[in-house]
Image (tube, rainbow, N blue to C red; front, side, top):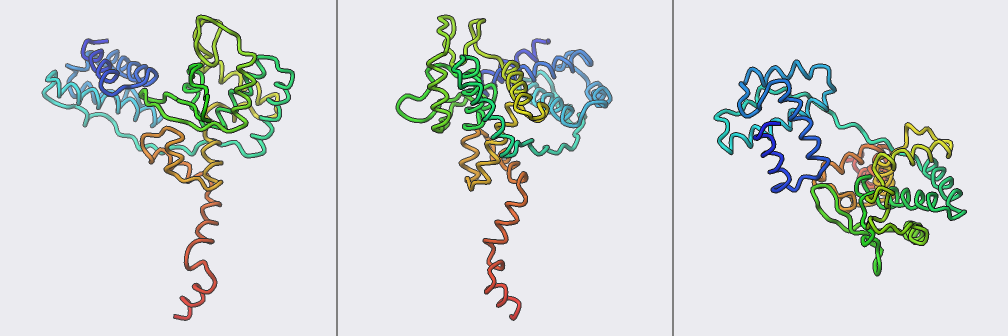
Length: 300
């Protein structure tokens, strides 16, 4: 990569506190663009415009992500004086629609947990770890990256909260229910003591369980529980946590805090998952839904 793009990535890490995964995504997108049109700090506008054709076969969401990375880079390049012009206007602007999150129903969640609890009954370490993992995914709504990277000292001592480091290095307190606390206690009793790892869920490599391995474990558990593995993932359990809390009457702002969303617009996607509940809410709470008021309004 060019020195300019490396400087941009360094700025994202130092000034914006971008997470490792975010930086990796920006690096891939910027490196791909430079492979096509050369050094972005000096690429002419017509070369930037040619990227639209290069990305023609990609999904709109992928094009939007790549274009966003380049727009931010070009803005940075202008601020630094590396470019006199900002060619961002030549980039494509596809319309993207945020997809509704996949959510497990209550019956599917119950089946998944029934299988995990059955397997953990013999106190075999891997089965107990599996139970603790899904309890935290569904019971606290953690991201997969947040869960696997939990340090051992994050386990609650005096209060039922986990200290979680989320995107951009932002920390938040996440409540841990009694079920999850019990599962954590069982896991700590059988957790292997590895001097090279201080993580709650260590790996034999000395670091921690990977997101890929967590994904594989959950898929395999879903299959054994009689569920379609394609519909089960760590993020699906996080979505189920949010959706089921909202169904139960949780406030959207509280949900935003629990999920670690910087923008409430991200949290609002869950209001579209249960339209029947929203219709029932309008019918029961709107003034004209009350029989007396509706009759009076009609007569007036």
